[in-house]
Length: 287
Length: 190
Image (cartoon, rainbow over all chains, first blue to last red; front, side):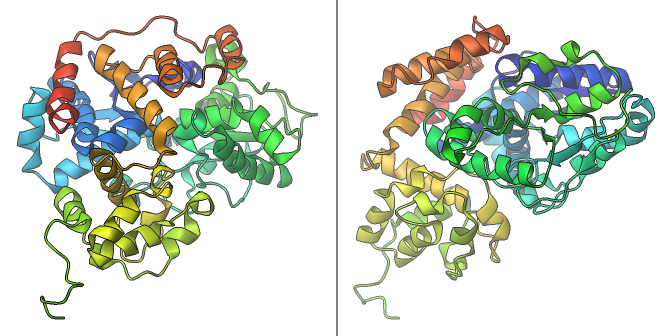
């Protein structure tokens, strides 16, 4: 099977391990990733603040490139990219007359032939394969953290439940993890304020990390580079804001799945995290 | 309500601009306050989301201006919690985008927006120049624009040893086309 692939800028830099682990897991389950040719940035959390039309045109260009390459579906692992791509797609489907204008701006035909999917919905299609290949169960209590952009706005993403989503929990369970029931699954981490309002990010991440630890999770599991960098890289600020020293590691779901499949940790980029991925005594079967 | 009333909204209100840009009608909001209750940053805001919407509903310059001058509009993370929970499905983050853009255009954006804007501008500079985001370039440009030269200097070496810093920008072949996208959108509105 093949699917279009839009890694996005973060996955080539600060979230390399997400790219590495997505690729490793997709290879293991037999899904070929076809990169969108000569892709540009989607504008992420910045374009829409300054200009709405720009925030639609940048993702439309990416989808038009995918369309020209004959792709019908594009996987965007980064939740911010996913949100911008599917947001532009949805807006242009709602206002088909805008497609002409956007095609002029991007100098390419945009027809809306390419669908956008997130990493959770793609992995869900392979849930049974993943389960069958999970030879080293990830036998840990995990807090699955979805953040904002994978589940909201519900009418745009049309994916899972907006307030208490389940897909990541189900996938984690397939590889032997025990997902906890907890209230911060979709609370915002502060997203793009990481640099400009680190204080705010520390406060918001503090609530998330503290709740996961109080409910005895051994790892936070995410599927968004912004969530990951705020929960992992901003841990010193988060701990300072909490007045605690919480060392719960933050893993991408694809790393959890990859580890359970017996893929070498280095190939999954486990060593790249700021909060070391180390666990206390095993709570379950270890291979 | 007579059109002769001095409370009657005139045609070029912020609400009208919101309607034109997004199709959203401010009249949909009945001030239940659910947006403010769920907003992760409303306690940091001088005006909560529903207060911003209320000001726009008046359709009067002085209230439009108060909304545009607020610091809170710059704190909206577009996390979409408000729009998800709104019983009227008002897409509040899209309204925030329009209010911010108008505040900038009129030069009345709150001083606290300075750093946040510097970040977004630095981000878009990078995309306009290379077609993709160049993270080191973004941070350097942000420091120049904001004057926060020492911010996160201890983070760079930690990221470097973990292979998280791409040292060179990625230039795409379609850089010129991306530049023209900027010119036709952001650039055409001054």
